[in-house]
Structures are given as C-alpha cells and as structure tokens.
Image 1 (cartoon, one colour):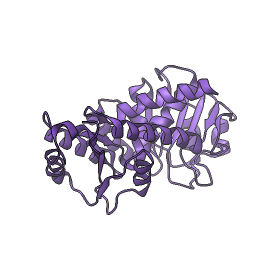
Image 2 (tube, rainbow, N blue to C red):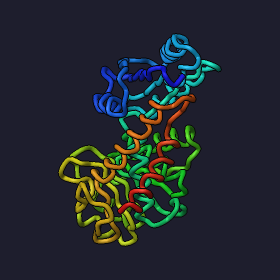
Image 3 (cartoon, one colour):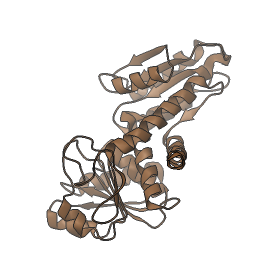
Length: 300
C-alpha cells in the first residue's frame, strides 16, 4: 500500500528522544512521527504490536520503529525484542542507531579502510581509544569484523575495556583484546604497534599528543570523531581526510560526520519509502557507508 502514510515511532530508554534523530527523520521526509521516552526493554514487545496491529497489513512496512538511546547493547536487545514480536503479514520496519553510533562508527571505519587502501582490514593492528563509549565500542566491532586485530584501550584501568571485550565477543562473535594506557610511557609503547588508530573519547579531550604520534612509526591511518577542540588526536583537523601526520594520515570528525549524515539520511529515506518490511542495523549501516565512501571518492 504505497499510498499509506509513512509513520515513524521513535523509542529511547532515556528521558528524551534525541533531537538530532528527530531532525534527521523530518529531513528524510517523515511528516508523522511519535517519540517515546523512558522505554524499558520489557515494554518493547507490546509497543511493537500496537504499531503493527493498528494498520492494514499492506501498510505495515511503512510503519517504522526507530531505536535510539546511548547503549548499543540495549538498543540491539530492543531490536531483537521488536523483531520477535513480528509475524506475517504485520511486519513493520525497524532501524536501530543508538546515539547515531552505528552510522558514525560505520562512517569512521569505512573511511579508515579507504585511506588504508585495503578492502577490509585483514591483519591490521587497530587500537581503539574511548572504547567504552558507544561509538568506540561499535567501531571496534566493525574493525574486527573486517579482519583487524583490535585492541580496546582503557585510560583508567583494564577492567572496563575487558568487560566490553567480553560482552562484544558474546554478542558479535569477535575477538577483541584489552589493555590499559594510563601514562604517557604506556601510550608511547602502545602506539608503536598500531597500524590504525580510532579515537572516540570525550569531546574536547586530547588522548594522543604530538609526541605520541611521533612514536607511531607503523601508523597508516588515524581517525578521530571528537569535533570539540582540542582534537582527540593532536594534529588532526575536523575537516581532514587523508591529511599527512608525522606517520600515516588523519581523518577528522567533520569528514566522518559528513559521511555519517549521508548514511543516516539515506537509511531513513529507505525506511520512509519502502513497500517491504526492512531491518536496518549495524551491518546495513556499514555496507552503505562503504558504498557511499567509494562513491564520494570517485566523485572527487
């Protein structure tokens, strides 16, 4: 029923749905959307079935469920709960992107692959700083899925990143190592063994200094999603894409953000226009980010 109006239900476990996602949805064409805040996992099934049973089966795919929040694991659990509630012919469409992490991490890793000049990251040594955050953790998963040897770096202790590594191994089947880098000396020793560095730390916090980068003699690519000065990785400007560092090249937050925006917009448009039920999650976001990164490179 292509004439059925697209509706987007936006759920979040937080006190509010992200204004960023609301704006993105409206700009993607949605004229009908409804936010739900403080949603718990055990409420998702009933909410989903209210969404699906209130429309004709032909309109079900044009009923969208967007899952936000700031917890990747919880968002995936919510997506699983929603999918488990579906059955033919009342299958609605679902898109999970908590805190924009799936589309941001997808853009970050896709651009890093591109600058590294390799299809995938097989055998590359990847270090992820800010790995306990939602973007850093998901970027680590994508890099591992692409074949990299991934290390989650903790700036206080190893316990938090080790827990994250265990959780992601169980959830995604990826092998991640964990290490603590609390001191300058530990960071110097660590970056000496990096082919690729992904930084997703707190806004306005420098994680790696110029001196650290001077030690990273094997570095091919460093990417930083922090757009608030100072940069998370010293010497990377927000618009940089392939700009030379002491070793390797850098990718800045706004270069990543440009691709992230395009990916999220395109996925929301896909959800808005579909006549068949869709599920959009991490893998779908990464596949599109790779495709769009390649297209942008060709376009120059």
